[in-house]
Length: 73
Image (cartoon, rainbow, N blue to C red):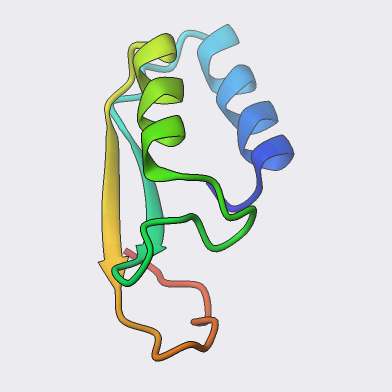
């Protein structure tokens, strides 16, 4: 999710109209396992996915201390 609020609103709209969301995907630096946007710990993001009953997939990146541009998967 790009940002918590935007991603949460989009997810809510999808679920309300009956679209099945099979997983959530987020990027995270392999150096410290904290999200790029908010610095959330991996464990917290995993717990959020568990609470939603939607698996979370992490894409670990090496950024050499720099923020990466948005990745298109």
